[in-house]
Structures are given as structure tokens and as C-alpha cells.
Length: 234
Image 1 (cartoon, rainbow, N blue to C red):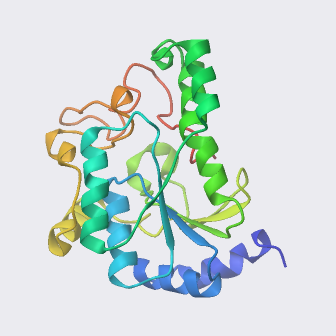
Image 2 (cartoon, rainbow, N blue to C red):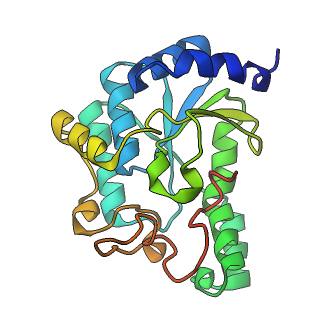
């Protein structure tokens, strides 16, 4: 039976498990084939803590796009120090970045949605695809209430683009529940969150949001789109 064909049975086993139990179950079932991609956002910091403190054998990696906030890189170092666990950094291909800048300019992503998606593809999607290659489970920090296009997701989904099962252990967590957990476990987080930056990506593409704005409003704030970069295409 193929990986995709196993999805229904896996969903029945996962649905009643806590995030830690789910991570343990999948890491035991697919030994050495479970990876977690962290953007160092609050949700991802929660999952990193769960993996590290429970000694769950899941490989953690992050995408260094070359345009991250200094605060994000500082958080990376603080996280590795606290949990004594190395986070594998993945980078875009130098030649692809050089061609992107040659074609569109250093900040060409402001000019059109097409140019922005090209930048996301080179700096994020391609490195992600390489990092996921050969694995069975991709753990993410997605929560259903983050945006309308994530509201109908399930904890286990088939990612057709990468041929992998995506596990979203915090899918049904509320924002308040997540903040309470961070406080209780003393999890390090990006100080930009305290300045109104809810969803944090690349520095040129992220701004703080005002009270009442959608959590994703600060991402690619100059355009009207679904506010996704292509990592979680559906």
C-alpha cells in the first residue's frame, strides 16, 4: 500500500492523540523519515519545544532566504542554545537568486504578484522541496484560524506537490491557547511578536498589523492575494 493510501488509517489513529503523542507515533512508525520545517514563528517554536523536550527523533530544518529579520536569526541561535538541538539551515541556490535579481531587481517582488511568487519560489519553495525529498511525514505549525484558506485543513493531509503526508499537530489550537503554552513552558519567541508582527516572514515582505486586522494582513501587505508563498499550496 502506498503512502497516500495509508492516509485514511493514519487519520483514525492520529485524531485522538495530543500533539506530542502524534509526533511520537509518527516518528516511531516512519523512523528517520519525519521532518519538521520551522519558520521560527510562535507555532513552530511550540513544536520545537515538544520535539526537543520529549527527545522525539524528528529532524528540524529552517529556510534561510537571505532576507530574514535580524531578530529571527537571533531567535534561531537562542533556540538552539536552549534546547541543545541543531536546526539545519537550508539556503536557496546562489545561481537562482542571482538570476532572479538580474531579471526583476533586488526588490522586484513589489512590482507584481507574479514577481513576488517567483521570489518565494526561489528562496523558499525550491529549498523546501529538496529538504523534503525522500521523507514520508512533513510536520508543520499551521493552525486553522490563521487564515480562511487554512480553515478546512485536516491534521493529516496529502501534499501532492511534494508527494508527502503533511502533519499539522496544532491545527485546532487557538491563538490564546498557543500563547498560554509559550508562557507556561518559557519558550523563546521573536520579540517582533510584541510589536504587532503576528506572522513573520522575510523582512521586506512583513509589517506589523493593527488591532482587528487579519493575522496574515502583515504578509505581502502591498497586494491583494491569498497571502501564501507556495509552501502550503492546496
